[in-house]
Image 1 (tube, rainbow, N blue to C red):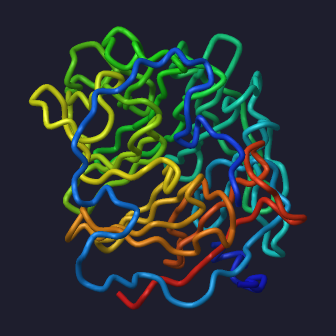
Image 2 (cartoon, rainbow, N blue to C red; image 1 turned 45 degrees about the horizontal axis):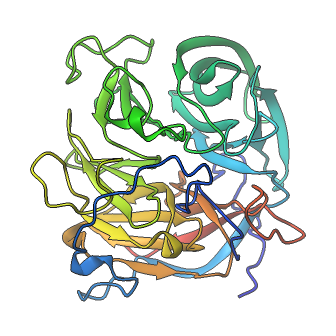
Length: 378
């Protein structure tokens, strides 16, 4: 497929590969320090072949290029109709312009890039508060910035530290930020390459965290005085909520299973004691799992009863109907290379972000790119 460049769809007022190795993408941990997961019988949905079910065609038309020439991009958020994109290695935050170009609104200070670390997830509260997850000298941290100016001249204010000391490493840094329907800020953290962090409730690694927008610990968190919302995670990087408030998260496995989980407060998802479906009362099993070479799921979006999941090693956009979370369908397999993020744009289209310049892909001359595709009639 040769997608056309999307003209006029990023206008002001409505802006809307083959993998060499990838621990962040669900491959074997190069340090060899991870304990072997307990074996588990796979559910029927674990096969790379989509589970049987009703025809599910949530996409229509051909993907179109929104912007190209990005350098290891990681996250997309929308300030009204204006898209902002983080670049992992440079620490830059870019504003997408009406002509398909980009302009730098600022650089997150103190970003230390190495391996999978750097500037990762972004989240917005209204139009003036931007939150960023990044790697610094003392580990991963969450900062808040004030945004000044108008579209076309946005600028990044000074950083306010909300949370630091999140375990960091050359791999497994987590990094996704998202505001939930409860108005709280959620953050996915990886185990930093040390599996023991995930089961240690005194560690912020290998968790999904829940913060008030000002950085305080919410009083109704499941563990008093702790940011920890759920634990036993290896390297989760996708967050989304259904209309009924159900929270979903995607997670990179190691050698056996990647996961799609329903997240509940205080639950233990097993890593490193188990990977994938374990059938043990102490752990919450995923609702679907995949071989890491077929998936390696990162960012995700959820709209109108469908999860859209960006796959890195699998080099595909996966769709999962909430009506049957054991089913899934892969789209564009191998056509665009590694996919890092998927978001719903203000005009209702789906945007997905390639990640071929992150050191593990095979970039083309115009990589990395953001593509837009129409969703089926809803």
